[in-house]
Image (cartoon, rainbow, N blue to C red):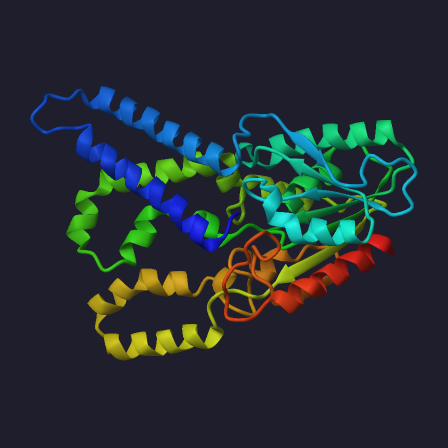
Length: 358
């Protein structure tokens, strides 16, 4: 994922495009074939989603994957453990820039696994398996640690835990902010968000078609990954029933630097109680806002803004620590949260190095 400002720009584009289509491509003075119009909207929505996604990830689309070697990767007989970095949703190398820079400063060979994350966990896992097999074949003596961010951890787990092919030189899997049990953020819809905005319900109902298009555009942008990342998705249930991979040391570093202070949630809840004063109509109107505000992912101390601490936990993994970083603090642009996370990011690097070299 990118920075908050970049996220807002792209979401705004995705949101406005369907409205523009509805306004300019369905003039009321013309007789319109409903079936043809639906097909046109579907085609345009898919095109918009694909275009924005390609711009975001640099044009990497489809099943193609790329391994980007770092400074020391090509050297044979390395004295340091090699690290394969797997970014999260959208698979942007910038999301792990700070991690890679620190690893290369300490002379660790690194390589970045880029993939088309919208294709989902399983398809990306198959591509990862090909890469791991090739690395093992080219240099069977290379000791390998896998360091992941967010959805990257799920892709690594899917291959290591569910594949019949075992890669002997993978020694450890270190996951930063892994949504092992999904993220409530992946379940949000345009309709749910719209109900939290100060607009007349009649206007929302009248724009139902546009809201549906927004959801289709967003779903097209994130693809299968959005469904996979929902809590209790089929693939997450299957993965979490499986045992951890034998012979691999697991570590999880979860973030607690969410953007909303817990006391803010409590104060807003108390204020809501005062405003409603037991009025059923007002209470009903506030329900969508309350549901959003109570999501653990966003609360400082309980989540990193995208992944809740409870979601990061995984049965069988005892090496579990939390630090107050926000979800995207390891890229080129750190997120803006209620705490200065610069020192915390350095602590994460220290914890990573301890686990890579142990």
